[in-house]
Amino acid sequence: MAINQITVEIESQTYTGWESVEINDDMEQLGNTFTLTSNIPADINLVVQPGQSLVVKIDNQPLLSGYVDTVDISESSDSSQMTITGRDKISDFIDSRVSNKTFTPPIGFEEILKKLLKKIGYEVISSNSLANPLPGNLAPNKIAIVNNYGAIADFQTNEGISFPPGESDYDLVRRLADKRAIVLGTDGIGNITIDKIGAKYATTTLQRLQEDSADITNNIITASVKNSIADRFYEYTIASKGTGGTTSSLTASDQGKTDAQKVILDNIKNDLVSYSATVYDESIRKTRKFYAVVPSLTNSQCKDRAKWELNIRKAKNFNYVCKVAGFRQNLITQFSNNDLNPLWEINTKVYLVDERYNLDGEYLIRAVKYKQSISEGATCELTLIDEDSYTYSIFKPLIKRGKKSKSSDSLLFTDPV
Image 1 (cartoon, rainbow, N blue to C red):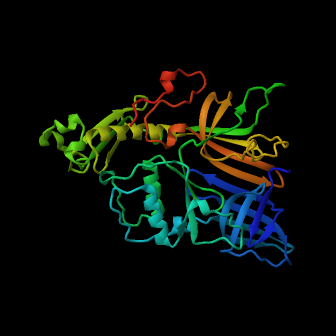
Image 2: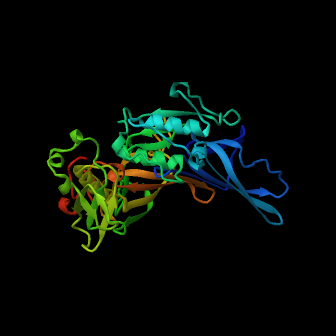
Image 3: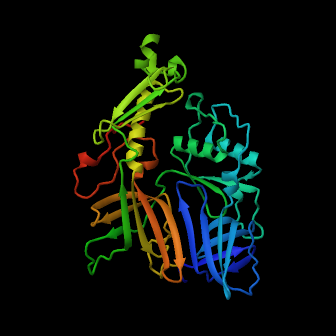
């Protein structure tokens, strides 16, 4: 079986031979996107139109089921170039804005998601009744929620399920998913998936050694790394205007405070806040300070949130981008079973060894770009980040960077939220 074959089915018609194809999957967005370009003779009638349904496949595995968004054609005297862009079916949910979003806690994440999908006009079906929606019978109003995460804690009154004016349904869902460290995605056939962070492990190691040997061959073609402190601070202060719930739900130290002790002046807005906590990142200049007011937190919750703010900013300001050959983790053609030769996918933990950048440890694949062109063949561009970039837990990461001392690179706080 040939591998790394991209096919595009538009309204039941299969198209191949594109000049270039790019499919993007990213944990920072819900739903894949694609771009196709082709040189076509000037006298060929164009049949691809915006709004048509399609499925994009790699080796007959659906990677994206959705619709054509844009058809862009530029012509010369003897030929035309056509560029087609589109997105997953879930793009309708991402784009839509509706009013009157009201929920009464306690309420579950899936219940909120179902209500919002139904408000848009989707029919939420059971994941047990899924079928492969080929072009022509793609049901635009039917969608399933596939929960691979397991039980998700309900949202309570003090967790700030608010709806700022102009916020989209998707922005709300993404914000709530972040609160529970949920990774939202699509399954290739148009449905929403709910996963835990780092749900999979790669079957191969990414490596870029100074020298290849007879036994070890580098699989990274090119690489770049970004490590920044632009969004990091020395001091993180979180304040809250609420009580964080009833008195019985407060910590012992909070319950022992008098009302006068609880009241703190917000010196930024001159408002009164009930609780406040500050943590420090000693590796950053002392003149950089961060301050935020968060609704309805206790004193200890303010400190946990401040710790999280420190660590999440430290983690997200590092990423590593590399290019590898092919779309699959092991380019071994005799693996006819794709479970032994899987595609590179987001939300996958992978071990990286890059001697040139002094990196050695476990990372998380945040984004994958599948690229195929006449000039370069099939390649994948992988964006790797620190594993703790999408968690609210405060812990020491598994990553070790080169030969640096563990104390210089570990996170400042190691207590769980």
